[in-house]
Image (tube, rainbow, N blue to C red; front, side, top):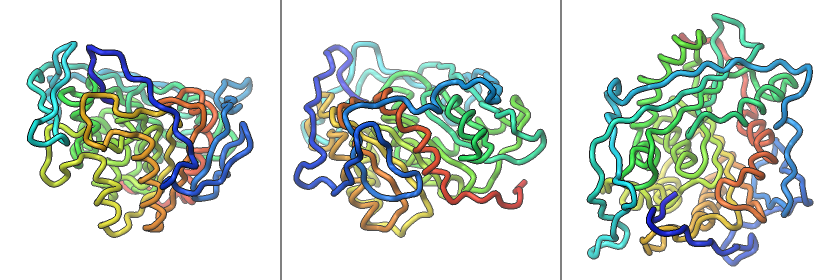
Length: 355
């Protein structure tokens, strides 16, 4: 997300899934979700009933959640930055695709990490896992309790990582989630996962087919960034209202348009990577929510473009256009998360444990 903190967020217009240039999509009956085993584009109806797997059920084993805090003082990757409250930035008069931020400075942070361990986990065994942004995500933990009990997804660990605070350009969260590089995945690999194994007493697989990422908004673009720059670590990606727009800061000459580059250049111009992707966007998702007017800040357009290029390249992906839905819409997540998890984990076969 990105908007001037000192001004109210603009009300996004409602976009039609049938707008010219948008991908052709199958319209679902109201309240229905896509099949968990089918690639392609789908349109959700206007009402979003919660899936039964999103509530706690009597008799279903509930996982244990282990929580701990990480301090910026202990991080070799992210020592911490922050943008002054009530400030944002100004478009570069020489380049409207760049934002000049003068109020960002070093600052400490503490991040919360919550680790879900299902009751079915066998101590000492090597488990698949999913890493989520903007944690803790209690909805994810509830969904996994029910899906694991019904053998619809593997017995997996869920690692829900809090961000380092703030939002968008000049913030710690923006630096972590919007930077187009392998840096955040490397931070998770070398600084977070060892703590998860030590504190939750679990062993995590090194098989990329047994590793997934997920998130919403910039956390969603981060989920794809992790897998794109490190496909040897992650093969499965789940995003809500992914920020596939121009929000990277500081600027990078290799990816001057930030995550907009995914559908502009990176996916079309690169060999196909071994990724399976689930994406969602709402018809009232963000549209020009900040001072930049670079033509690269429409979340619906960005996700539509993602669906188009993924189809052309032959990726396994599922794209959901949700009607009557806003940015990272909670009701849509309550309706679709179980199906999304099943889709993302489709085809997973537990291989010999890697040390």
